[in-house]
Amino acid sequence: MIPHDFVLDLLYPLPAYTKRLFGTSAIYIGDKVVLATRQKEEIPQDNGIWVCTKVVHHQALKELFPSLRNLKTFKIKSWLVLPESADDFEETAEKVVTLIKHNSNLIGSIPAKRKPKKGKGK
Image (cartoon, rainbow, N blue to C red):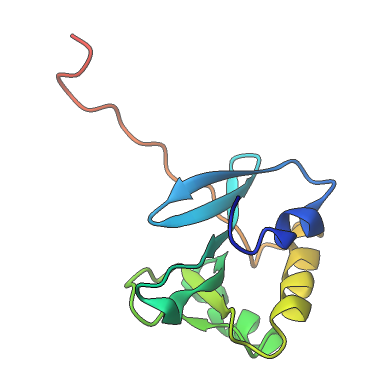
């Protein structure tokens, strides 16, 4: 079970699936990572729903959703976090998912394919 798993219900009927990604449960739609969820006792200030985006879209997303902020302890620039402590946590999560369902270019990224390591498999 992933933290804040209600977002998977909100994403229905999109074909969402999860993968582990730097200590979170990343949520993908096809090849595109759109969200991640995190709830850990260590470094709790970055717990919540992470929104995958590009730095160029940060200001627009923060204007739409004032509860979104940059990560405090992780130096990952392409993500914003909706802190689980936000008063409008579930309401904002629903609105973020609505953007995803409308295929907004503000959210999501297709990760670069990893190159196979040399010398492996021979």
